[in-house]
Length: 397
Image (tube, rainbow, N blue to C red):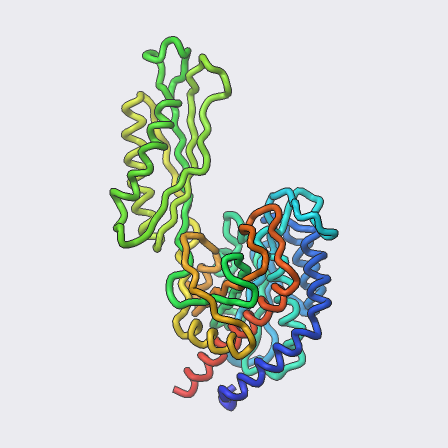
């Protein structure tokens, strides 16, 4: 480990990148098999087994349907490389021969990520690496409870001495061949607010004898837009968006006895989200009282903010360019990814990888081309090299 120089690290990257090409046909075929038989969050065992078989490395179980291992040098730190297992409950509309037919779809690129990870691992077996690789297959990226959080709480990172983690995700906002892994804030901290409004209900002709949950629900929804403005520093971005409103069973002359509101809150920190949720609770409860109703407000804390390590980011950009990728514009948004949980344990880096497909993620027609597999694989390799450089320089110092 101590004998590795930056020059040798660059040479490893060059060899690794060339070896990837030897495994591309296999990876493309694997991607099609994964894509044709997707499994949604919590039901990923079949996908995990398929990937483990292709990887030809034994993984131990983690987070119920996930897997994790370490191989390479037995001593010293390992570098984690993530692959997400789950698909989305979307009816596919791509028209390709390997399209899903089971009412689920890999519309977020996880099939590409898994195929790339397999290519990276298979190619790595022919190399002498300075540090161990710890590939891990994460379930439940698309839903709660978070698979990443479960992996972090499992103790596997400590057990396997994983001291850095690398993630790569395709993104249509970047051109094919481009990558973006800027330092600092990348994605938002997220949470979900659920508001249950209850009233006595009654006949539409006699609203004065009932708690009007329909109007109360509407009033709460309308007022939520003011919560962020009144509680959040305008220099720190935040959004509160309502995704579900449910009240009544369809009858015009019945005042319903219950209403439901579900909203997502996103900001630059979990602390900000909690502050916003407390303001929502206070507002909803007082509004409900004015309509002779009650409001029960619950908050589900989701992912923390995703923060890229500064050193990993700088190192990554250098290796990515050396390995033939172009550095694109840094991407920051109030989207969320539970990869952020790993950043609370170890220095971490999320890299976005451009694709030729310009439809949005989660679109039923979203289908990156085969080139994306190679580009994601090179991004993962560059991330591994970035972490290796950080470890080597830390030893030298």
